[in-house]
Image (cartoon, rainbow over all chains, first blue to last red; front, side, top):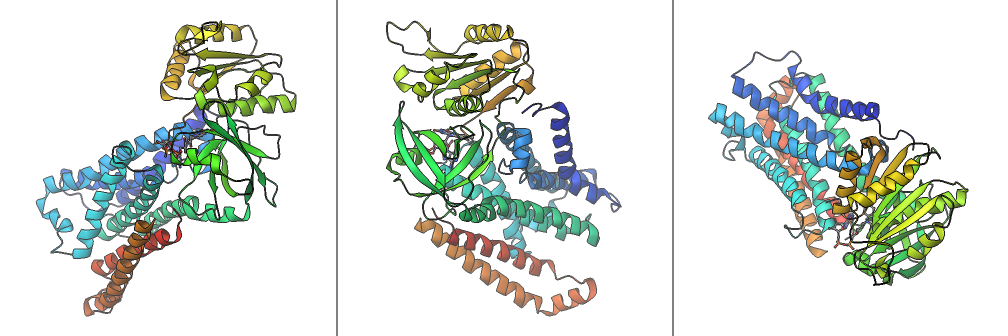
Length: 442
Length: 67
Ligand SMILES: Cc1cc2nc3c(=O)[nH]c(=O)nc-3n(C[C@H](O)[C@H](O)[C@H](O)COP(=O)(O)OP(=O)(O)OC[C@H]3O[C@@H](n4cnc5c(N)ncnc54)[C@H](O)[C@@H]3O)c2cc1C
């Protein structure tokens, strides 16, 4: 997509998010009552600002396609995480600063004063600590991704509802009905967004079932699953995008996993290729043809520039190659000739998932496939070791012969992507032209 | 997952109990006066309703969702 990421768009989004995050504070500042001790005012402001930030988190979760597609799902996940952590610190600072300024505020947390209020406020504080800690250290907590995601959604609702209830009932700044109504509406929108993405949308998806057509083995302990639409028109997507898949009798399940759409965007059938990473991906080989499947998507803006003069440097590690296969197949099926270099890193050629399909795609004019093997056979004449700066620079030099801009796209293990991003920045590629897709969300 | 269903039932029951307590409390003299003057219930009553409502909804979600 041309100009998918731009300063104007990024600033526009940041402006909107900042405005919404600051809205509770603005509301409170409107005809504010006479001010109290500066520490008390600071404490209250921390709470309102923290609440505002946590309310807009529903927008940045990455599950709203219209936000995710203009921001980039990967950037959005980073943003969500950082914004969330700032919100958590502010909300935790709220009681701390208030108690330092005026110890009598402890009555809010004292069950002897008001049992249910104290319970609710302790619950919010614990939910906030848990939501942050479990997102930073999910594996150390021993939480499966599915359980983590369920708790994240439920606790987000608890925090929004109880936190907003508290702000409304304190009744100091937000005392007029319209102020209360705006904040309540904002909270309702936050809860509504969570409910929409977690419950309503999957439930609506039950009218658009898919069926497994085949499951076939690939190199590198991976499986390709083909799916056909069952009684509907299927899915329109752009190559590089992904969808959330679940299998079984209905779409309302916790086992929903994201996979890049690996086939051509022109095909009516869709397919994805998954490598065995854990319980779910290891069970894919047992899927029987005919099994019902459910799909939410497409998501993501890891999409090549539409302008055919843009040269593409694709850098994949392992299973991160799947979105690139979709791009190359789509170019082939649409008869588009593009200047493309695909650098594909694997331990050995036997691990290089979809390498046969790539070999034939690389025969197209302008397309180059560069395998990088960590542990190559003795007679290997190609690149060896890991993807390094000199290899990336030589690819950029080869692409520089072509008139037109360069777009760099990378997908694979974190270290590969970090390396690509930093080398490209050093080589003067602007950030808007470096696209990354991370498979590990949390 | 059975544990999830058990937690769901517990939250639903706790939520319904809190909503009932909220209703009882809204019928008390302090709430009747507060409602007549400000148009709102007392904070304690509101907290019963909010916590009861959230707990029941989460309980229901846990009961309907599949592992
Ligand atoms: C945008 C995107 C595109 C992806 N495309 C592909 C692809 O084309 N091919 C491929 O093999 N893999 C892809 N993945 C990764 C794939 O979703 C995970 O490997 C898979 O969900 C792991 O599930 P598991 O139960 O087998 O493994 P687990 O052992 O449970 O998890 C391994 C890791 O995968 C992640 N993960 C687990 N469950 C989920 C879930 N429900 N949703 C999101 N992440 C989860 C977690 O980071 C976890 O640490 C993609 C991920 C993302 C975010």
